[in-house]
Length: 290
Image 1 (spheres, rainbow, N blue to C red):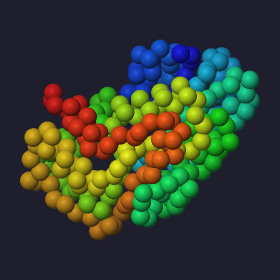
Image 2: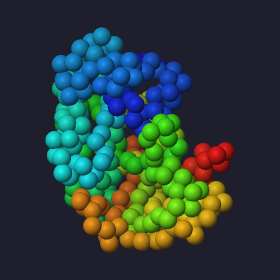
Image 3: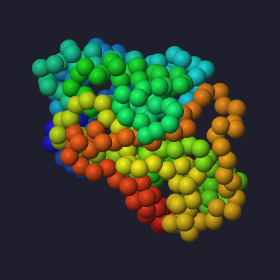
């Protein structure tokens, strides 16, 4: 299947995507600063990345590097810039230097480049915090390359003991009967991690380029998501209250409607994006043995 270099391979998505692609027949090279990476380098250094490309001659590159702490991004713009903007810029520059390798790249972006009422089409850009703005700036640096930019969001059982997904946090809190607030005014079209891995592989195989919303064909509030997941797992929601994100005094503004119009992606890939209720059922299966 060829060689794929994955930047940010040790994060929440990378910990699932790397073994998935290896099982699919790819030679997977994990590149980054983390000591567990098999190629350790400064991911903001385009020269170092170009040297890596020359040494490995990859057919594919995937960028998963991201600073996702929204409040920290708001107060520490450099933190956001280095991960969300400079890294994709360095990868794009290295791809220019090594253009003879015909590298196809996949860049994972976010649904937080949108704000206001959804569903959002790809041209409806409106970042309202530093995180969303820095991610969009990173997109612009790779957009002219042979790259698929995937604006997405995901949940599912994490493979990392020290990094929890939204659904991990939710299931743990419900099982412990902790008092939590479920936001009825936050809407999303997020995917299960394993479904996202499937779609990334499909994008690689078809070598699709462009900017795409990648999510479910329909959306749901995070409160309803939690209630549906709890129901499938037989967990009580008696200690969970329904509230509104808009009532919280957060450092960074958050978009509340991140539902995605996925028709462009469906057309480019000749597929139908999944139903979010089916994704909830798939997610429940991951936790059913706990």
